[in-house]
Image (tube, rainbow, N blue to C red; front, side, top):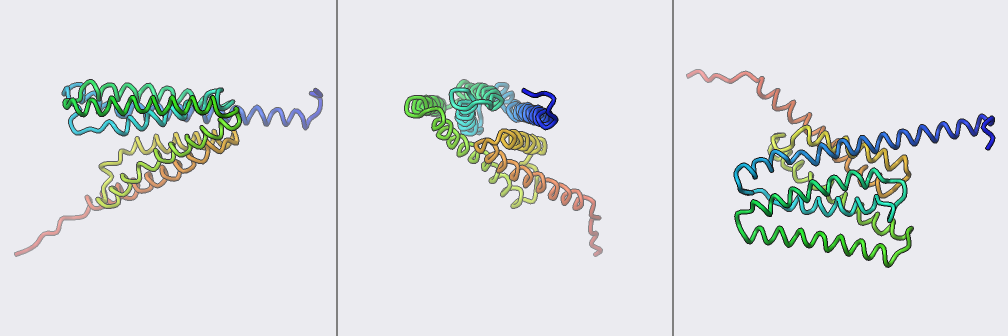
Length: 244
């Protein structure tokens, strides 16, 4: 290797800078995702304190667990090379979602609800086990990455699309009460980070769903800015006094 060649040195420098940016984007994505994973903790503190799941639903955590498991599998070397930061963030996410689901099972007042959540949890592991078995036994490495990649894209798009109901509620009520700012901001920053990570790696299965998540995140933040500003302006309006 001719280290005296300026063009070669520039190529190596560019490659090192790109790798550094890629690693930084992946680490940032992990940090912002961690904020999302811990955001339900106040809800679960309330469940433990009251000894009841009340009217809360376990479904978001069941689905998030399956999503994290699929994306974790995609990030492992068995399926993909060089995307280990996808595996780390989703393994942490899977641990959180499993813990949240376990709390639901432990504190569900209705035995039928406890059985339902337990059955769904078992179903998640059966589905994930089938995905692992099929991808390992029926496909070579390249085809396996495509198979699991499309599953992860579908799962992530569905997850990112779930806030659409909140967006609809904000527009309908003209209030941001049910759309916490920091949660929306964390979702946006996580999506942007992994969008950049996927672009730098030229990984379609990472940058496409996170690009969609970025657009939805921008939409939520714009709505928050618009309706919160509108609420402040309405609060400053002088009260009309009717003279009789």
